[in-house]
Image (cartoon, rainbow, N blue to C red):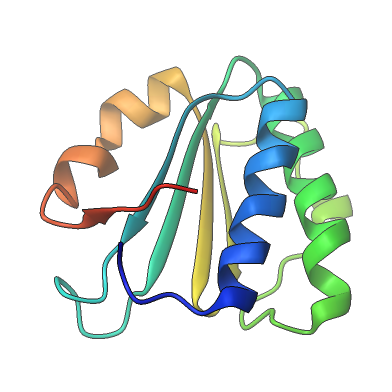
Length: 121
């Protein structure tokens, strides 16, 4: 198990439960600390529709925003209805990638970061 603080692990568990509740698929947690100089933890999840992705993002942000962890924020209310199929939530140490199957296959982050350590949450 990678060296992850108890607090961060609790955040990951909450994110995982939100993704499960929203019926996301292929949920993965990756520790990139040993393969990249400034990236830490990636959460990858697949959604069937962009609407489902926006709903997931809003629920995750509802939990994370009060923690004041956001480094790069986007106004989730302004997400376009015709989004790209990929929503990135950057909370500093934790980056959440919510993608449609088409985008996840096309960008293949799982393969790109194949050297990262999987995290069991």
